[in-house]
Length: 53
Image (cartoon, rainbow, N blue to C red; front, side):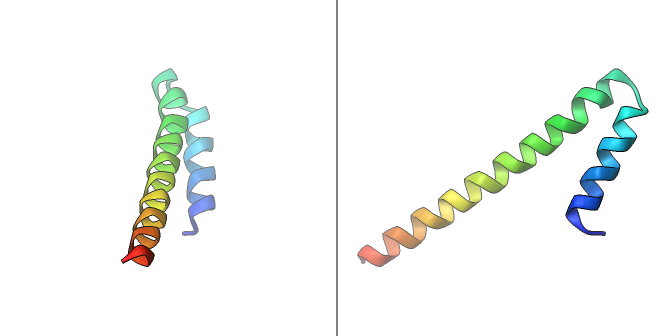
């Protein structure tokens, strides 16, 4: 299942669920996005440091 379809299904299911899921599902997406952002920044930093050595 592609990532965006999975996120769309998670969001749709959360809208039909409890208030905790209504809040939790977007927070999971935000957390995942933050992890991906930080990973990309670390990779960029390592590449930059590698070019200096």
